[in-house]
Length: 593
Image 1 (cartoon, helix red, strand yellow):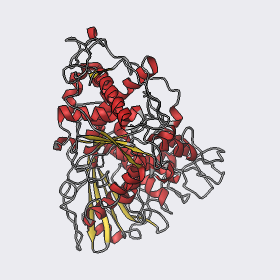
Image 2 (spheres, rainbow, N blue to C red):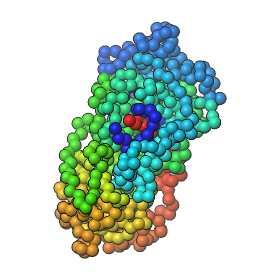
Image 3 (cartoon, helix red, strand yellow):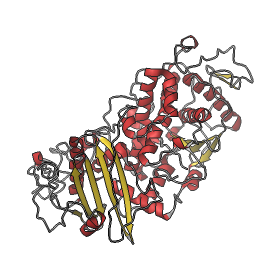
Image 4 (tube, rainbow, N blue to C red):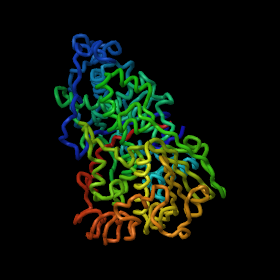
């Protein structure tokens, strides 16, 4: 089965989790209930899906699968009694694993069925084992178009190499259902210290596998959005248990100290933050989703959702198991030799989904300093949208993926095309309401015009020059609740891909300021500058800095989006802060088939 977000690996299926210390969240208070674990008397029949933990007197050598909170004679209330400053030897690692298994049982209120081997591998060994070779040449070319369509990986950059770099540099541990073992990634040339959070997280994956069999097809989504959605429950439960585990460590358990330097995370400066923030979505939103499931229906509700995983990131973002999707209608009408990839994705199509679409627009502010999500706000305020969340987690940052521009998602199908050495795509999207479709369309037009060097003319194919990371021609059409985006190297190519499109070549219809499909709203931004006669993207009012045209009177020579801001930083997420924070994360999901 195809994989978009993950590099290839020797293991058949891998569930990965990671290090959970976040630089800019130190000191954040734990959210309510993160550490509360009912006592044995409180976790009986009245708590759905819960099993009482054994007392210390009940836990003896040889006890394991019969009791909760006791593994191989180790009780969850015991303490680590060896120094870890020089790394763990084999017997110490075994003892730490037994204790952590007993504690995970107590927190999750469910027993393990069998032992879980834990091994260590150096960062360089892990990178060598997982690098490159991600699928066929056809897959790699197809996948390049997916990430170019998301404006996250540029035309001259290999998306699969970018993905390999993210996973190779940030993963700090993984569980392999195919091999029933945990592998912890440690720094090169150092003794194998292990972060207790990483170990607890991966042991929860092992428990999931023992009860649900993570090798089943339902735990690998057929699309990018489907895969992230499944991770919302798989990784969400692991993070939720880890949250409660960490709270107990802070309260009354003696726990091993996390290794200095984060336990083997790679160099955050090498990450593509767009890819990174896309794959982080299940860890934050998923944990909050599981928290709500358990609050409403106990562990039984979590078990039920594991058996019937979410199908879209929208369901996890909005924590709505009944989230309704719409029907995406698309017919391949391409001419002049353009072909899809019928053996890739789902009949040639990828579904990006709400999380990836949000990151697409947000990334323009972080990487390119374009205000796309909210054009009347500054670039730094647009970056902050992703960082402002209503709920906190103790062990990691939570990120916001909900915004009106993408919050009305109802479905999408992205079809990469090829024609000799030419590449293109048609992206059909569906939205809950016409207003949702218009909001998405307007934001997409803002993004195009920000990367381009001229105004956006309605009803006309738009061109972006070769100096951009995303050169070529783009057609954007809205019809009611549907928005269709077509991309090719040239305007003529756009009309070859969609000959029925109500679009004209750039010089055929003038620059009349709208596409005729949005009720005369010009380029979707009539309230902030009409068709953009200032030479920017049509979102500015009197800006004179000649940059992206999204500000009001910005003369600081920077991004034209602020009033007098003169630096490149953003609150809580400047360039240096972003590198430091994300380098500390090391918490990427990873399952490949």
